[in-house]
Length: 472
Image (cartoon, rainbow, N blue to C red):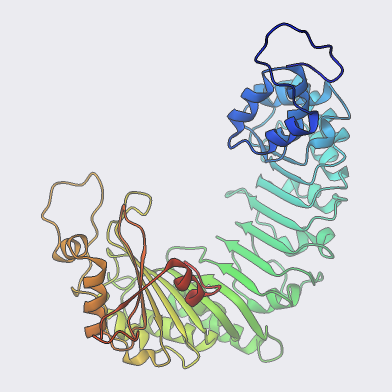
């Protein structure tokens, strides 16, 4: 394949001479990164033309050797190649001094870098890397893993107008308050994910007016007042308990304090809240939530299925007044026969109920998944839509066993038969969506207009219209 301007010969040839712009367009339609590399290896022209496409996706570097190789490649044709570098994830620590020097050169010259992920927490890591990162001015998305307290100055000095932060702290290090730590980003920060953070100040001095999404995992956030003060416009909250063992009395004390704090200020409404029952009960979140999601609802076992747990679940529903409720039930720890009792506390605001049940325990294995969608104005009238009172948890690799009747029923029955059964047993159930392992999901309307009173099959498009924004 000739480069532009090269002379052609009269000898018979199967070569096709394409315009340079056509070749570049072909590169943009390749399906995989390997296809792109293969195309680029055919000639110097395509090698040059393909470089921008190499950097269209996030570049992930997992070893010192690969980091050094990438840096040499970028610096060999600077500033052209470095101009294409917008996303970089260094998922390793530079081992050699040569790699450190190359890495520093790239960071200093990467004038269009917008997204970066770095690993911290290594005592021997060259401090110049932190200084160079803090001097960058183009970063919009920042991900930091294993941050130590002594390294926190990096974030306190950063000059970039960061919009999205994903940060995790060292488990055994001194805990850090992210509201205090990220104050330089207060005018621009929109989304925040923090792991192993802590509230250290009852009254934060920093307000994040643009922040709308907060994910707090394993964080000690016991007081809702400071969260409301720091993030007044929050509309999407994900929060989980930070300890496995909790004293119900201590949780109740925190709840009363949070309820009192919300008498003077509170969020008026939330678009989405995701969390475990215990943490949501502790926060006492008092606002209207459009979509409430509670994964892994548990009901069996002396530590969980107790009247107090049931009361906490009821209180959370009363606090948040959701219009859509999404639940995930694990068969090993949830007796499906208890589901109607749980739903008696459903508020009048509830319009949609989405329930996912895994028949097999490992959600990453090939699983039988049953999804229920209930559009119900009066959830208290809801009956358990299942052919058996107890679901069974079967794990791949376990000892041979006889299949549970429920498992056999679901695997042998057709989707139409299941929908018919639900139509007979659950008069308030309007829609039923079923996904079995190895099969496409089927969609059924149970209050349809069939003359025979049978469930009406829906297309995927029609089911999507029913679900609207509340898709699985």
